[in-house]
Image (cartoon, rainbow, N blue to C red):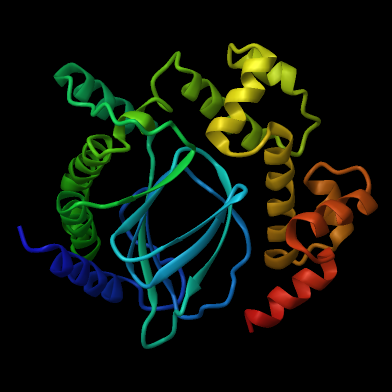
Length: 301
């Protein structure tokens, strides 16, 4: 196997070929995104899917939930469920673009990998607590697997035969990393971590509706007290803060991407009062909805 620096360089060269414009390119690999940014401007919020995202050129500053991360080449962000996310590609330019590859977690492949490693007693007993998002440095084996995944995008005639094999290897390598056991608990039925992940999944699908967190706790088989305590430990915010962030993240996306007025976005994401919505928006983003959206739109010109 070639060395770490050459693996990252080869990944960057492949992504340069795959991404011909400053956007996420389409290709035949299901659940895989190749990302290119040519500007260091802050980008609008989105709700990230469960994924492994690897940076191969440049640096990324991400706000996931209530926590900020800064990371660069060869570092992977593991997101265990749907999470509010906004980011900027630090220092990105046309001559030095930000490049990354993201693999959306497919529960079936993840379950198969966990079952295989459990049978082999190969899950590491790392001391890390389970978190809905974590950073870790990809080792050479994981970088090589991502490199082979990028090769399949360049040779789509091989994708149908080999993509699931390579993706399964990526799952196995992540699960045997120092964060592997902590991550696996999010997907092992019956664990508190799995129950909180299921709660997050449910909240992400229903955040525009009135939320009764006691009922959510009951849905996932937890007492209300345990639900609140473990949710904060694993997600990094209270359930109410998480729903607020989901609503405001989606409202921001609607105003930027679909030109919604603030009041329209307010009602669409589940608020009853535009005044309260504006106050919540200012508390999270530091500006009123109209001022914030105008500034972001100007930066993206």
